[in-house]
Amino acid sequence: MYNNFVMFMEKLSMELVEKISKQKGEPVWMLEFRKKSYEKFLELDNPKFGPKLEIDFDNINYYKKVGNNETDWKNVSCDIRNKFKALGVIDAEEKHLSGVTNQMESEVIYHKGKDELKDKGVIFLSSDDALKQYPDLFKEYFNNLVKYDENKYTALNGALWSGGSFIYIPPHTKLDRPLQSYFRIESESLGQFERTIIIVDEGAELSYIEGCTAMSYSANSLHAGVVEIYVKDNAKCKYSTIQNWSKDVNNLVTKRAIVGSNGLMEWVDGNLGSKVTMKYPACILMGDNAVGNSISIAYAKEGQVLDAGAKMIHIGKNTRSNIVSKSIAEGGGTANYRGLTKICEGAINSYASIKCDTIMLDDNSISDTIPTNQVLNDSSVLEHEATVSKINEEKLFYLMSRGLTENKAKELLVMGFINDFKNELPMEYAVELNRLMKEI
Image (tube, rainbow, N blue to C red; front, side, top):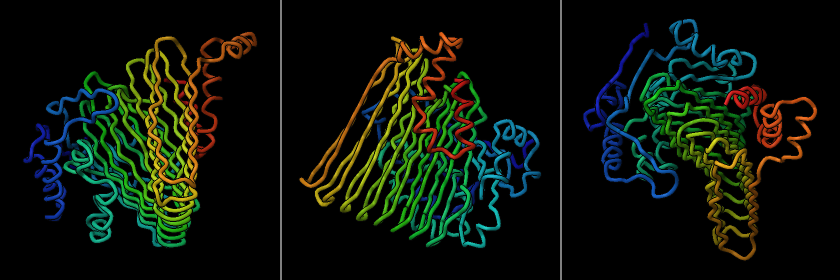
C-alpha cells in the first residue's frame, strides 16, 4: 500500500482547483493564481497550429498522490522502489549524480541531494517544497518567463501544477556532477503538470538531466509541464531530456530560458514516445554575446505525431544560436520540425544557424519542416538548411551483405544518423538511448 494516498477523481472545476491548493497547504496568493489560471483555461481554445488535439478533459484524473516526499530511499514503498529500479533510475544516483528528484503521478516521492550541494549553497528541492521553504525567491521567478495565459496548456498547468524541481545555483558555483529529475505516470488517464524553475546565477554552471516514462493504456493521459530557466551573466546551463512516454500520452510542454550577457543555454531534447508531442524549447538571448544551442531528435512511429523544434529570440548584440533537429519517421508516423528564429533590430552582428535533417524509413510516413525565420537588421546572418531523404539503400544492402538482418541494418543506420545528438548526452543517458532505440 502507498503511504498517504490521495486521489481526487473529479471533473475539472474551480472546486477541484481549490481542493488541490488546500491539500498542499498553499498561501493565498498561489490559490488566487490557480483560480485565475483556471478561468483563463476555460477562455482559451487549443492552439491553431500543429497536430489536432483530441483531449477529453472530463476523463482525466488531475491529482494523485501516492506517498510522501522521502529523503531515504528505504522509506519509499517497496512497490514504487521496484518500479523505479526496473527503470534503472536509482542505480546511477550514487556514482553519477549530485542530486535526484523522482516524481510518481502528481507529487515528488523521493528527493536527495549530496552534502556538496548544501556546502555550496545550492538549493535543490521539489517545487512544492521550495514554495514553502523559500517563498520570496520562489515568487520572484515563478510565472515570469512562461506566463499562465500564453496558451490553453500553460493556463492548465497554472491551475493544477504539482511537483517538478526548483534549483538555484549561487554565483560562480560549479557542480562536478549533474542533477536529475525523473517523471513517471503509472495510472490510466492521468494528468501530470509539473513546474520546474532553474536559476543559474552569475558565473555559475549547471548540468541537469530529465527522464520521463509512462505505462501504456487504452485511454489517453496528458502531460502539460512548464519549465522556466534563468541563465545569468557569464553562466552556463545544459538541460538534457529523454522523453519516452507511452503512445497514449499527449505531451504538451512549454520550456523557455532567458540568457544574460556571455551566458550559454543548451537544450538537448529527445522525443521517442507519446501519441502527440508539441514541444519547442526556447532561448531568449537577452544579453550581449549570449549563446543558445538546441539539438534534438524525434522518432515517430505508427499512430504518433511528434511536432517538435526550437525557438531562438536574439535581443542582445553579438548573440549566437544553433539549432540541429534530427527527425525519423516510420510506420506511418509523423515527425515535424516547427521552429522560430528571430534576430531583433537591436541584435546587431548576430548569427543563427538552423539545420533540419529527416530520414523516412518507409513510404507511408510524413515529415514537414515548418520554420519561421526573421532577421530585422542588416549586420546579422541567418542560415537554414533542411534535408529529407529515405534510408540509403546502398548502405542498407552493404550491411545486409555482411550478415545483418534488415532490421539490424536499419537500426545501425538510424543510430549513425543521430550520433551528434547521442554525443551530447551524459553517458548514462546515451546508454539508455541505445536501449530505447532498439525497443521502439
